[in-house]
Image 1 (tube, protein in one colour):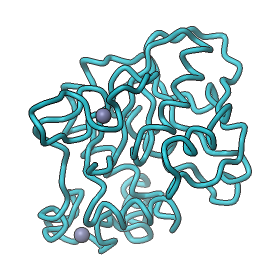
Image 2 (cartoon, rainbow, N blue to C red):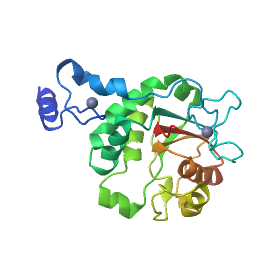
Image 3 (cartoon, rainbow, N blue to C red):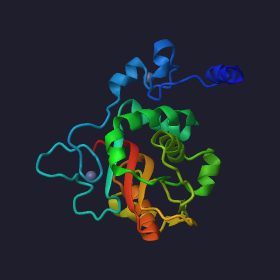
Image 4 (cartoon, helix red, strand yellow):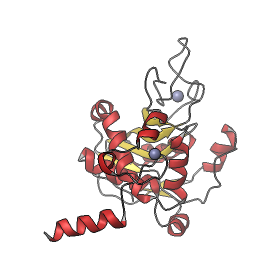
Length: 240
Ligand SMILES: [Zn+2]
Ligand SMILES: [Zn+2]
């Protein structure tokens, strides 16, 4: 009874919202992730994708996208659930900067559902979110990648370890930087934390995958520190 009451209060205080438009989901929509309008506008990743990063590719000439061709990646393979376009752009902004931590649960649910086979093939023994610099996380209140990883961990029944990877450099946003400067900006930005446990296969999780510099620099630290295999999974990926 008590649990039911607190559940009802929770729904009043924190009603289910569509991450696409931030509208409150009522009635039949309330057990869905997106409202009727946004569900038609979001673009789950499908079709031919880059064998390395999971970005959609249109040409039949290659198996790799422009960002992965000729690049030595620390991540073995990556997948993302949605194209970073339409309502997902504003969804990611609110999830990151406007305190919409509550998006983590529905976004993890739909990302997991759409990529179940790939995730179970990877069969990681731990999920690690791309960390945020400590002062930044303190100011923002949470790390959106960690919130997503936490929910994914529950759905996959695999532990999430937010402390085995640390961001030791307060980097400037990657947006607007070319590949060379992105790498320079992130050089030595990640270090592994103390852990007595040995990991063989890590699923590295982030919110948005653009050129892959962040995820790969983070993966490099994990590979060097643990000698593990690293796969990546992100909510959104740039359309390329
Ligand atoms: Zn919506
Ligand atoms: Zn690629």
